[in-house]
Length: 414
Image (cartoon, rainbow, N blue to C red):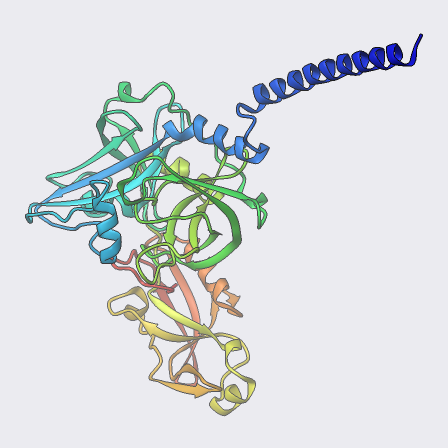
């Protein structure tokens, strides 16, 4: 064989190998595109798309209407945000004072089509401390792409800002509105994916994604003042997201979006969700049609370990206990005779309350921190008695407090 013929043969062989390799690569890419749904998406992106496609029909928009009042959910927004929303036909101010409207989100939680949301989303429609709608009030549910339908309030947990709704006509539940499973929120890791679905600014089925920024972020709920160990996320949450689900990468609900840190009225990167395990603890009571509100004492306290040792010695304070900083007028603590601080003392730039009663023990338990008293109070129901050992003007005294449900929002009180 001549060198020229050999060269032609090798070239043909190499061309055949290229054709075979190209065909094999095309088959692999075709298979990958089939498995991922879209060859342009990364696995994490495709997972988010799959979760949204599976559960977006399960996340609803909730509208609350109460005749006779006017409250616009957009009225506290900055002017530039109002202008932006009006381009989408949202955020208009009412032209008359006949109707109060609220807006929020919710999601299907069981096969009956019951829907979880926040209490504060539906609170304006309720008659007093009950699950009954007030005269002239209505709650409607809108599934994506469907007509709205009236709903009733099944149960309420005012303390933890939860409410359970039910369509009045169960036949209006879409077939693709699947219950979204609740995760074990104790297993949440900081840094894991967080996906929020809801209706910010009345824009239905809005999806945002971020991470879990922190867990056990303890702060008083805006509705009840009862401390909740929130999940913190940087997934964008805005007015209208309240009551919507915060999902993990398995498509499970790790929390219910509840509050935002928003000094200017809109999201700045800090959102808070009620942990799913707290929801699980109260779900059976909600389904039973109860209105849950924790009994309180009506005091704000400061643990004495917050006072420098020199200050405690100067004021003749014990090493353990809690100073009563404030007493809510008319509260159980007020009726039991507890007194709040009379003045404040500036210690190293911090103002500390002084001159109030000091709680040393509650039901036989030594009060070393605020959490001890809080747990004792929250474990009791209205009408229960708590026996306190206090220092009153320097003298030891025993008082009994009869717990009751407070009518207002005692921020950071026990």
